[in-house]
Length: 495
Image (cartoon, rainbow, N blue to C red; front, side, top):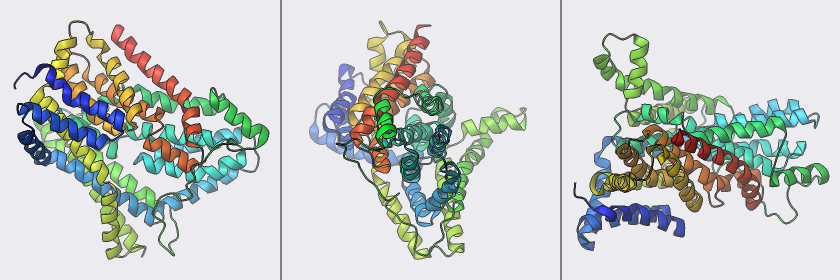
């Protein structure tokens, strides 16, 4: 591979700057890819442009990339099926029966229980962060209002339990995307690598724990104190000058007419998908496990097989199996006809196309930076004289925070940072798992603090609160968890 020196920095740096300035992650990534190929072709814009097109096509030469993109598209069909079947509405009704037990008295203990149930619901719906915040907001907003809990607190709980749970329990699109990025960086066991990294993903862990501490201690701080005091003393759920982002619908898809909402129409497909993932990982990695550990116990071989299995195959088969089971389940109940299922599948796929496009661009910029320009190797060579290997995760976390805050997207941050962070850690002999976790945690933290983040906006909508009030009241909590994560990375680097 030719040594491009400082020129290898231009594609990712320009992509970062453009993303921050324009807030257009897709265009920024595409420009970064194009610039990389122009540099490789000696500054020839025409041949660089042709090479860019070919590079995007070559993304699909890798079967793992293709399976990951297919999963991203098909999971949209599963989500839309669950909504149409009445599964989400049934789940809401089931939880409401539980909540009714705690609405008789407006005592402090009842407020704690309801807030905890809202947090738990957000964690349990880890299959998709947007569905999580929308469900928590639509489900608990009436109860929070009756108990005199501020809309800002509801938005905080919904936001702080969605993305952290989705990235820590990655049997979903988050996991598929991350595994795809790791495969592009040369990891033969992306599933095992991702799970080893999760143990060091301190921000989402601290964010979830802090939310529980706030709920059970009944001790708020920052602007949230005034929000809770306002409701307690005046009964006003919102500030006088607030502009609530009201969302009366849980999702854009309503339950089919005449269908009785049932929670199991949501629970069964989601459980099927979650359970199929480790099963398929074990299946695809079993031959390797038998070959590498012929004399080991079955349990050890099974665990080893899961680590060596194909993550992209597992997630694709899991979502296909779950979707097919949902079709059979809903057909047996007379909820949907075959023609409607096909139409909903296409609608769900079309709704996930932006995510699939983001995956394609992330894979492409990772390829040009790692395999052609050697960006990570160059960065490592520049900083190895003054940067301690142990401080690499700390630095990566801070940069990831800045990018995600400025762009409002955690996934786009992952796509930019992983191709830089992994080679840098490998060249400097830093802990790769901690570095990967730092890149992921920084993306989630910056996304939580950003006023242009999709999940923050959705949290405000579902909770029917003023968006700036939500960001303002959540920021101190996110800063505490983010500061704690940064401090842990710093201490780990210094000892």
